[in-house]
Structure formats: C-alpha cells, structure tokens
Length: 479
Ligand code: C2O
Image (spheres, rainbow, N blue to C red):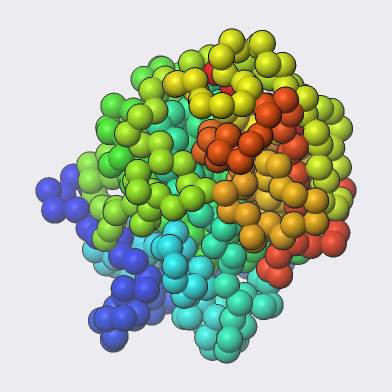
C-alpha cells in the first residue's frame, strides 16, 4: 500500500470542473481508464479479469450471482446494513482506484467525489455534467442511459431533493455502531453483527439517507444504481461512494478518531479484493481507519453547514451534548404498516415506562427519543424514499413541516433484504426524534401519544404509489 508522506487529494468533482482544463483532465483520465477496463470484458460473457469494469462491478453484485465465502472471484460480496458497510466500501474504492491508476500508468490519479451534501445549492444534488453530457454512451464513457431520465437529462436536469439526502442528521449521531437486534438507538455506521454475511438488517443512518437515496434517485425504477447487483456498473457510483467515504472522515473529524468500535469482531475483520496486478489483496478494518495512512485525503472534510449546534429547525443540535444513550425504553408500538400510500399509525405512549420522561411540560434531561421501524420488506418499492414524520397534521404537505421530520427510509436495499435466502426478515432503520419531541413540547402536546406518518416520496414530492413495501413494527423509544 502507498505509504507516501504527502497523501494524494481526492477532489470535489465540481471544484475540478470549475478549474477548467486541468480539472477536466482528471475526468478525461477516468473516462480513458473506463474504456480500457471495458475492453477487458467480452460482451455477453462473464468477466474473467479482475482489472476489468465488469469484474469490478461484479464484486459489488452481479445479477443471478449469490455470495459464497469460497468464491475466489469474491463476487456479490458487498457488505450492507451493518457496521461493515463503511469499511468494506472504503477498501473496495481503494482497490478500484489503484486499478484505474494502473490502467492510466499514473499513480497520482485520485478518484473524485460527488459532494451531494452541500446545503442550499441544487447544483450539488445534480448529477455532475460530464456524466450526463454528451448523452452518448459510445462517445462518453461516463454516461449511461441506465439512470432516471429526468436526473440524467443533458439540459435542465432535475436534482435529488435535498431533504431526502441531507447528511447532517447522520453526522450528528455520535455512535458509530450499536448492538443490532433490539437496540432502539440510532447509529452513524450500522448495527453490530458478528459475521459478515453480505446483507444484514441493521442499517446505519448514513447508509440509509443519504447514501441509499442517492442510489434510488439516480437509478430510478430500474437503472443500474438502484440495485446492489448492478450499481457498480455506473461510472458515477464510484464518485458517489467517494463522497460516502468522505463523510466517514467528516464524522471522524466531529467525533474523534477514538469514536470507532474497538471490538475485535470489527477491527480484525479482513476484506479481500484484487490489486492492480490482478492478484488478491486484503486489508484489515483496523488498517483503514485513517485515510491519510492509506495515501489519500479529501479536498474538504468540512461538515455541511448547520451540522453543528447552530443547526436550523429540524436538525438536531446534538454534537455538544450527546453522551452515551441512556438505555431507551419502549414507550409504545404498532404492527404491520403498509407503505403503499401515506400511512399514519397512532402510537399510545406508556407515560410511566420512563418516569419523568413522557408527559407535557419541560423535558426531563437528559432524554433522547427514537422511532424504530423494523422488518421493512418488499419486492417492488415504487419510489426511492419513504419519509417519516411525527405528528404531521392530516393532509399537510411534508415539505411544510421540516420540524416534524424524523428522517427517511431508503428503498435501496429493501429488495435485497427481502430476498428469502439472506436470513433477514427485512431492514431496520432507527431515527433520533429528540428535536421533534422538543418542538412538540412547545406546542401543547400532551405526551399521551405520537402519530408516525410514512410518506412515499419521489422527485415531485409525495408519490401516489409506494409499491408493496411494508414494515413489521413501528415503535417509539425514549430514555
Ligand atoms: Cu454497496 Cu452504495 O452500495
């Protein structure tokens, strides 16, 4: 691995473009490498060369291929929905980047990132121009038609709705991971699991929204980015994941290098890929916690505006004061919720479950509130995202109530987690709603119940058809 004292810089794609010819050259090089990698694939045949485009994508997933621990090709091995999500993808990107470098014969080339986390700038949530224009896959290796047409348009492209990919609520969570199973609190990186079967059920906050919703919006109903088994075929996948990887560094900047798990079940887990020589290459998670030690850093690791305590309404000003989660207790739950249309479940709260916590009047401190949505399953999600609100008035528009927003359930991964052979009943997402409850206390809320509303969301806001997705249970915890 590189051990260069001056790390390479992974640049923001928009800052490269703003720079003119020198910046564009980084993308032209990427396009050239993609062409070389694709030339190693034989159309219609399974990829055989680890340095090829099709092989690299197949490591993430490939239609009809199931992960097998014994597969020397390591196909379909992406780790999702657990604390392995971030490190697996970090090593995947690093090996991919080295393969690109070797095709270019340029060890300084660095993967750019698509920073869709910028606040108040729709251009940031728009697919970067070189990936859309020219709209001709023959002439432009960065282009594919396998995306949502409206986002992929050469002129006047739509952008991903910011609220569905706001990275700030996940960055504000100080726990990298928490025990999965029954743990009701939300974490940044995903649930603790002991083994590394690819699809697990405890999705971390950064993995759902923002990460998953970028996949779902860019891929649309059936484009490459919308499914594990095709996502790596889209050239923009790699810039998207560079940004997810960067957000991990942003999080580390906020919470400290010591905030990651020290459990050997995590640190000592090794993931294996291929190096630029086509030979197997592995790294241990403990070896990849510091990007600079891996030879790269990001152009910026500033948190998005408003991540810190002066955050606007709807964003929990958590950074300064959050300590360990004080064992939240179940306050109430309802079963079997369909996401086919907007659905509201009224959850009666047990005021005495946590003395002093529920009820009207000033909040007992410290206290944190969570909504947990379990066993989210479905074979045909019809939208990229499902927004979750608390006490949204009947008929009110979600866009008008940021202060009541709990978060977003991403459709990306629901199909995979529903497949009968992965051993999980579906996904679990947990949202920190402490700021919403604080707000409700100022509006005369009596503490007796909370209404949780799930709203199917698309490019034009609330969607009429959410597909066949449903949740086994929706619960409220506090502590
Ligand atoms: Cu393994 Cu964004 O996907």
